[in-house]
Image (cartoon, rainbow, N blue to C red; front, side):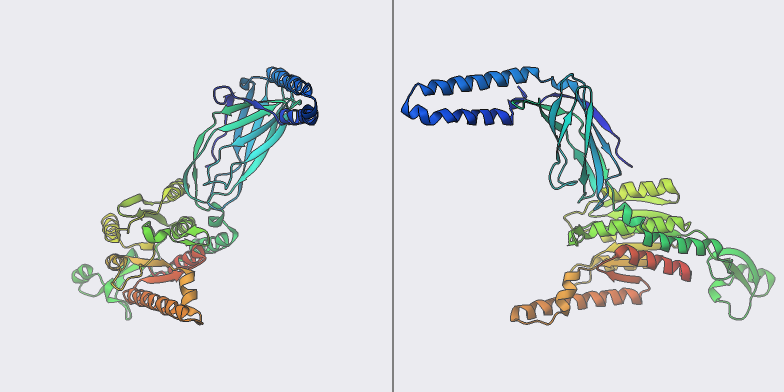
Length: 452
């Protein structure tokens, strides 16, 4: 997942690729000492011209002594995979194959997606030597990012002349979700507890839905477990006996519509959803379950069928890294139809979305109701903390009173919709923070109670 190292030889930047060094301007400024006498005696103006000519000759002499750009090689190395909101180091190495010592300023064309400003590093390199410097990146967006070429401004120890060079080491990499959060200590503890329970749990007959055998009917058995064909053949009631499932199907559905573009704590709601989905995938795969992924906007986005293993986890990470929020409202009904078509058997569906502020019944509620007719659903609604803060505050002015009343109306409508889904059998969770932990605990609770 870490981008590979790239290196290339430098070439002249622009048509000429030369410039004046800082000492060139310092020497020109020193020549201005002849300017006051020149107002008194015009012959001193010739001294200024001679001085400027000497400075120009010195600049040309220094320029000819500078090595050509082809004598330099730059190598870029990544210390870790770029991940959202995770700081990592990038190294630049400058190799000098000439016989002259140079002082160089190395500039890397890093996009704003990875760093607020491109890094500029100063270094000195001896003949046949090399020098390196590190800079830090802190990605602010997921998805593909292109780091451009590197640029070198180098001069000799005299510092009168300067040459510019360009190194073609442009590369495109993927900024992944927050990998540290998904594999943090708290998540490892939750996952370790669940894995231990799953591995050591004794076989509990009748609590799961995995068929084991047939037996005679006993008082207290559920009628849904009756095997009527076997009862007809034997002339007495026969009950199916089940075992706790060792592997279950988990579908993670992510809404990538316009509502998920809202920001909470410098990240979009979609970023929080992606981080939570990655955490849940790690926990579920470690528990032995099969995990599928479905993202959607106006159309179905990325879809991964049910599977397990490290290779499947890597595929999930790659897809989650590329999910982008759209500007239009998502088609929830289309997503529900696709899920019902692809998944016939009962499974756990974890749907991460948000509810629009409308007086009508949102489309996502109707779509979730269709899915709940066949599957067990955990519906995760990402609320906005600012909305609840406004709804709970004590207004001091007339404007604040109107804002508070509007916020209370919106939150009250949301609560009614969520209560309606709970009465239909959905496990509804609305959270404004720590989405990953909330979602993982909801999944572990379903596993522990054998609700699937």
